[in-house]
Amino acid sequence: MKSSNILVILTIFSMCCFLCLAHNAPQDYLDVHNKARAEVGVGPLVWNETLAAYAMNYAKSKHETCEMVHSQGPYGENLAEGSDPQMTAAAAVKLWVDEKAFYDYNTNECVKDECRHYTQVVWSNTKQLGCARESCKNGWTFFICSYCPPGNYVGDKPY
Image (cartoon, rainbow, N blue to C red; front, side):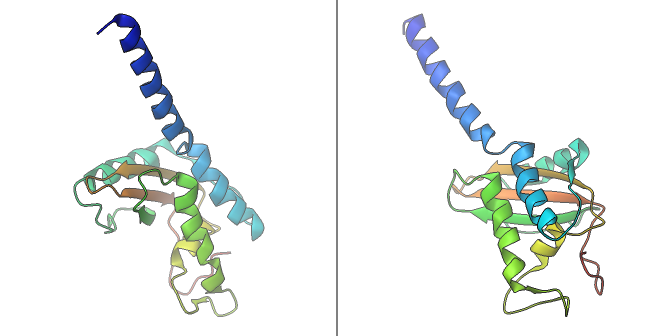
């Protein structure tokens, strides 16, 4: 193969990797989280590399199965997965934020469906975030966000 052909192939591959990473950068996770937090008067989260490394390590452990099981680690945690291998960070976080429709602030309870992913997103005492994404062997995409300090304490309201 000619060196010019190899260069073209490497350039295309690099562009594809960049586009994939461009929609899964720390800011992509932060933007959706912080928009939801601002809507309820809660301050923004900041990215934490230690949390991101923890999340990445756990996400990689799900490569074979994409099994949705919490890590039982020291941080707050939200998990998501999707059958679309191109699923983005923003789409994963939006799944959690969309649970707002099922949260009743007055009773501090979920109504009709799950809402505790949403309450972790907007938990006022949580200040730091780290997330990761893993393409699983079965073609699905696994997401994890880790939160510090954790939220969702029974009986406490998120904000």
